[in-house]
Image (cartoon, rainbow, N blue to C red; front, side, top):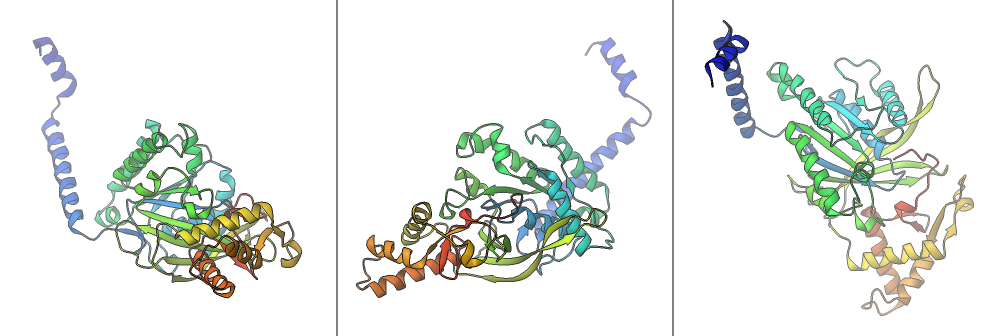
Length: 397
């Protein structure tokens, strides 16, 4: 450095408080290092007790209209208030919900949920719901996450330790469309890398997506999505007599950081409420009960795949319109058990079963297993795939 440059440096950057400022910065660095060291020794924070960890990647998938957004709005509203969700304790969190399709309906669902469940909030915060599309690859987006996270570090120790932040991206297809095909690794790799970056900053990420071509395929898109996820949740729904979804079921099919010897199941009922001031009738959900099924399986068995293929083929070629049978207000197509039995026996799916009665029992056991896993739906002896379900609410994602 020349004498002239050194003189300019001294004039522009040196003042009487210089040493004090350096000491303050150094002290902050030591404090951060101390906190990181201590956090590694302490129990990991959970957004939802023994269900969703802080700083995790959570994939929520299901067919269109299965109720994914209803579930997430309800979850976000509860963690914003630090309230129990599905009888599980939650940690008080900030949140940012990024919706790429009709953000207004998410805003209305958030409003009715707060109106019904938290009419007089004490310390709750409102979820930030993006009214415009966000480019998650923009450096400005990442900077916004960093600044929001840094703002939470300004509080006392309790505030710092107990206020994680949740980011919901709804849906993957809109994000992937900007750079390629979600079925290709070259598209998904940079998306997963970016989501992991958000997690490293301190955010818990929920990525909403759809089922594969049929429910047995799991998450739609490249297999790297399932590989990268810390938790995977499958959302299904059952139709009511009015022809719309009534019961939403949430099944956890993957948990990287803990063992799930049995699949946790949460069930919710869809209800409707009127927004004060506007009179709009908007859906929200109430928790019904929880349970568990048999040991989780990453893939359905060979026989289950064969039955799914039979059901899918019959839906396309020989469906029955159950509109009148179920008293629905729209057309709805399903397959009768007798049709499935005839095809199952003709294809000799269970060769060890020597009689038609034994083959019928084998089919029944397979259908029950598929229903428990949420891969098919059944009502009064009629069967259909969740992705074939139709609802009156096209925005219920």
